[in-house]
Amino acid sequence: MKNGLNTSCLHLEGGDETELHYGAISYPIYQSATYVHPGVGRSTGYDYSRLQNPTRERLEKVVAGLEGGIDAFALSSGMAAIALLMEIFAPGDHIIVEADLYGGSIRLFDNVSVKNNIEITYLNCSSEDISSVIKPNTKAIYIETPTNPMMNVSDIEAFSKIAKEHGLILIVDNTFLSPYFQNPLKLGADVVIHSGTKFIGGHNDTLAGFIVTDKADIKEKLRFLIKTTGSGLSPFDSWLILRGVKTLGIRMERSQDNALKIAKWLQNESLVTKVYYPGLEDHPGYELIKRQARGFGSMITFDVDSKEHALKILEKVEIIKFAESLGGVETLITYPTTQTHADVPEEVRLKNGITDRTLRLSVGIEDIEDLIRELTDVFSSIKEEDHA
Image: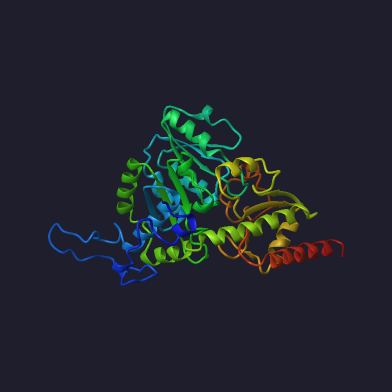
């Protein structure tokens, strides 16, 4: 019988082999660059840590198991993961990409992939007809769901059907929901991307990225590329992510509970003009995300009524930290216009719905009473200043 998700965050299927590591409950950090060969043509299974390291391998097995993949690749950051994945494509290839992506992904595609003669077509994949832009040289579809930051939800099974009909690779960035709430491979995706810095690591203390696949041919290409490019995650950072992933389930549940309460609070706040959270019944992706995921996550985007008020919120928060990134135990608030999406052209940001009134919350695990009290105090203070 397959283990449950919380158990799988702690234990590998088929046993943990703790006897090989002196009974250590915390998997050891193998801080070694190279390994002794027992003899010519013989190996312990590890030769050089750029190729593989026991701590990184353990982490990769855990993440592969959580996503239902045959292999996972732990990289030095989420962007390193995307950059490595793009190396499986050749000059002249065409990729259809979700328009509302994390700004760093757009920056990579527009400045590196295009430079390498990869053709990119951006599309609002949750509402536009993807079949109309497929061409003979199209090789892949790349989506986030929910998207960053506008929380659009795409139908992974529907895209998988289209991809299979045309012989395309379906790539899903699953960072916002994590493998605890959503498993794109089980819905027909070929590759899953994660910024492991976010929910998988969960503590805002290290960078990491993951690629997971259940396709043998893609696995072989990526295993060759990771040893060739040298972008694998270091042993110590692998251990930090291993430590973080142990509590993935309870963190995701707690932060989601907090997020739903905050989203409903924001809906009733007069300075807020729009709340984007797929756990709200009026969200256009509500029924779809219930069908393809086990939860709604803890990311909320909302618009306020003016740029001035948006900036004041950022200046006044205390428990909630004004900082880039997401997915940690601390609640963070981000201003996409100058942070995560600063390098995205203004006309693209505006088309996607990102304005100078847009704020993004990554809800953490603090006591919800403290978070609501802070938001109440911040918004009340702004109103008082307006009427002074």
